Image (cartoon, rainbow, N blue to C red; front, side):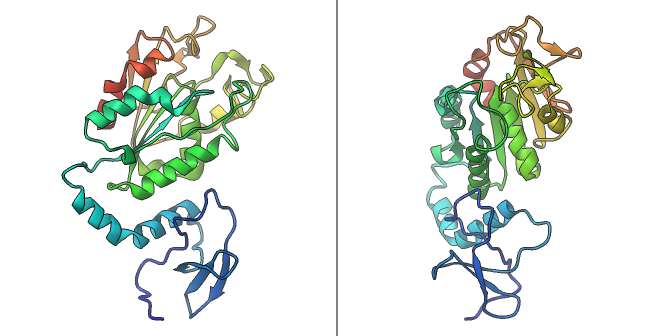
Length: 291
């Protein structure tokens, strides 16, 4: 077997499920090289040992790109007349919502030249509004969508738009995994980045997962952990003082700042719509903010 040792030497194969927190079985074939197997006898990749400090999700993306470079090049050439090269977009719905909540945004992007393969709409959480938070199973679909979006993006970057709790969940995933340098524009719509007064103030909050330490109570450890962090090169909030969720108690602000505003954001846009109106009736503005 002849291999060019000067080329990039990733580990992950695109077909491997994510998140995958363990290594496949490895067999050393020649100095500096490792053959990666799926635990049986099936070869899934040729690479090198994990480099210290290198995120696993980045290695998966590198391998995906190298393995499919020729196929992608041919596909891009063949479809150049039909598709434009823009960042892939990830749309993250809110608590107990669904991907269809973004139907107007999706249709607006398609009308502007995006293809359906450039738009990712993960479905996360359960139908129990009080049971969902920002840690564990809620993260997985969003993380997978972002990784897949980056891996297949013709620009190598993505844009992320989140609504309500989907905005804070998307921020959590970007922050935890270390994706901020791969995100061009981050748009938070009706998010509660500073907490919900209706949840109370931690630790004297309502005892539900959504309002707990990994939830949206004011001063929760989770919200404090992402406060002031970057979620992309550009960060914009879309908010309203008529938002019946963020402003449920009649007060939209925390310490004098609207709770939907992100610390360090580049811009904010204010409308008079309600919580879902901010999502449904601003699709044109959302598209403007990521283009």
